[in-house]
Image (cartoon, rainbow, N blue to C red; front, side, top):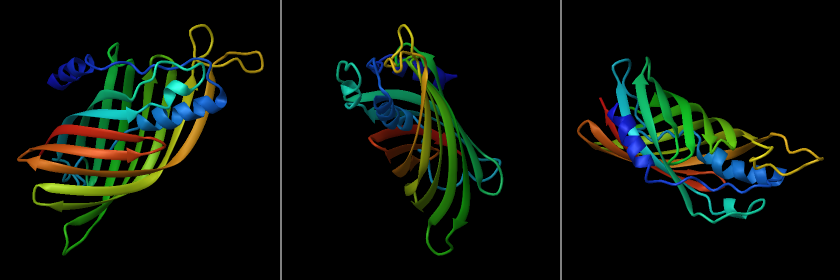
Length: 242
């Protein structure tokens, strides 16, 4: 409960992303490259498995997307450098190095954003004589941006990590697909095409790379991560893990 209250307090200090109107198909693809991919579910945790059914993690993260290109689309709008918002995450160990994570942020006026996502990780290999591990990750989410873009993202990554005492680093790569529904009609952001201004759906895919690390303080940790799509996304997380 305290994480929800804290996230709502934090989100009140952020602003909404300004979405331009009159977006053509090309403009909508560019918006998806930035916002659709950028709001996808992030790993942002220790690369080592939670440790079976007893493993548990909870955290609050802040994610920031570079959105300077958005202002130049469509009818243009006021330029912004970053779109920053909070996310709550809960992780649970399952069995045989399988971990599940839920990520969410209820809609609020501070960010104009709601996000709900899930991630499943399988640690399939750990080296015997070196503190390295390898995992496969699949993730999905849905987000609502200003009630103007409804996006769904699905992706997968292969991740390699190294843990040394209270530190860890990890590197991964994979594929990401985003499906965005852009709202048309009065108050919408879609350009008139073939005499119609109805809702439009765009779908794009891209290669995805990720670099991150964690620092542990007993059962608490700080994680930082950079995700590279068309634009980079930066994330920081304060979490509790046992």
